[in-house]
Image: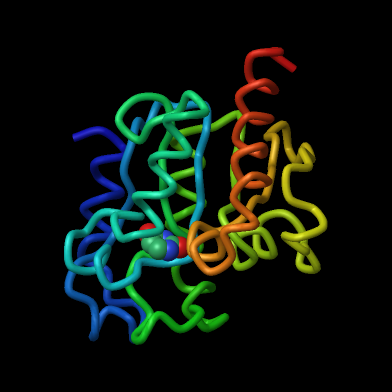
Length: 185
Ligand code: URA
């Protein structure tokens, strides 16, 4: 078994925090572990908990459409994971202690995938990975480099569903990502 498959096995059996008691499935992540781009969401919702795959609900379907239109897909050139691997009950934000317990798994995933880009989907991921005071409405689509990796935050798909006015900006962010990669910066 390779390092990524071993990590997956470990995470699927995790009981480190209380979320493990209410989950149906651990949502480890999906996509190409050799990809240059890692997308990071917040945590599984109901559909993700039921299926074990990230972003499969209404928001996920919208995300997939936007990704494909910008030249990305979860089956080829990206990997998608979450800050926490188990569903916070009632879709509440994950608690800081739950993130603290789980973040090591995302760090391990990141170390193995070794992405050139990390795209944070929404405030929770962006504030944890890019900057604790990150404001999605103000800073979305801006690239910052940390430890040799380009980081960018954009709208969470659920925020686009809540406010469809965000959709053109969110799509533009994905197009900027594609252009940034193609420019080979
Ligand atoms: N929202 C997230 O942040 N992640 C998912 O996997 C699904 C919904």
